Length: 196
Image (cartoon, rainbow, N blue to C red):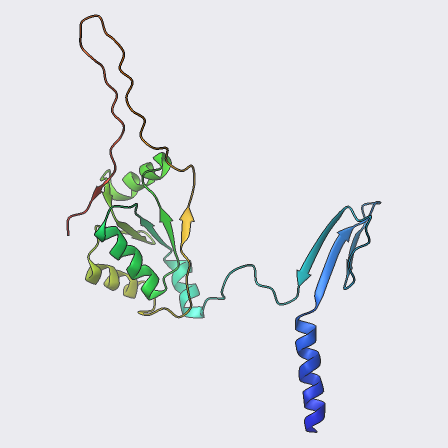
């Protein structure tokens, strides 16, 4: 094959992968697809660029299998050094994971269920296995056994579970009681950081 033909094929291939496609619905409700922008009267339109990813990096096969068989969830909040080291380890190893904040009431219940009623953080859940507190060697061994690589293969952004963010504690209301006693309601305390 001649070099100039190869160059033309490469350039046209690159141009095709960067092509834009438009989808729109006309006034009659008919859906149209085109490489031309929709007319001004289109009811609903979308522009797609071929080759766009939905915001995710394609995971290597080994990582896909580990995520499929042993999804990772970490229960943490701003509890100090243990929680920070736990987060750092997962990012350093490139482990796709979900972060759950036990200060959110429904996530707190999920933490209690996972730990058998204990309220301690950080907690690492790998598939069905639950590790309480942060001990680097133990966490690394569990991640290794689940098939996660020792170092990041692709950059990973953890998924923050934002189901109903916790409201800040409310000051208990003082209500006068006839016998002079006070039935003061106390806000729930935060899960205890594990002692390492």
